[in-house]
Image (cartoon, rainbow, N blue to C red; front, side, top):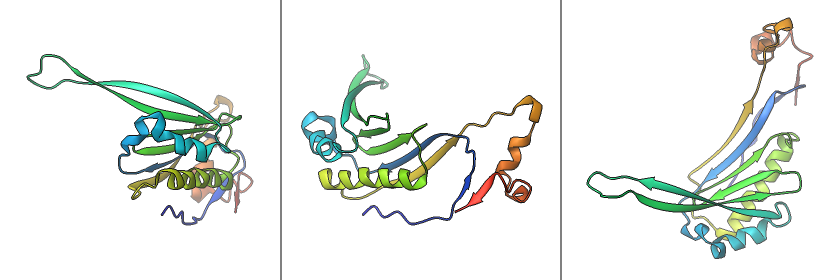
Length: 168
């Protein structure tokens, strides 16, 4: 159900990566709002993400003609490992978030695959609505080398910065 096709990639020697995110969205699973509903996923993730926290968020909606706002509480679940890798699960999505723990795309993909397999085994969502990966970079322009960082991301300048890039 969750097949991830290979993609062409290139890797920077000193990547400015601040955060790597992978997310899957699926139809609403109401049982993920309860401890009983999340328990099978917690069991399936126990080896990779042994620590779980329940995050309760309260939302308010105001409708025209209503005397008082309506509130609704939603649970989301944070799973972590000893290195603080984060897997966030709510009733219609699961997101893997790595910052300084990012150890390359292969490791990132493998960890997300483990989470997807656990989700499928424990909860069997009927379909995948959306799946995506996002890499957030933080690049600072240092005054003494102004603009140098820009060529790292300009593919037409790749021959000038060959030492900065290497192909996989």
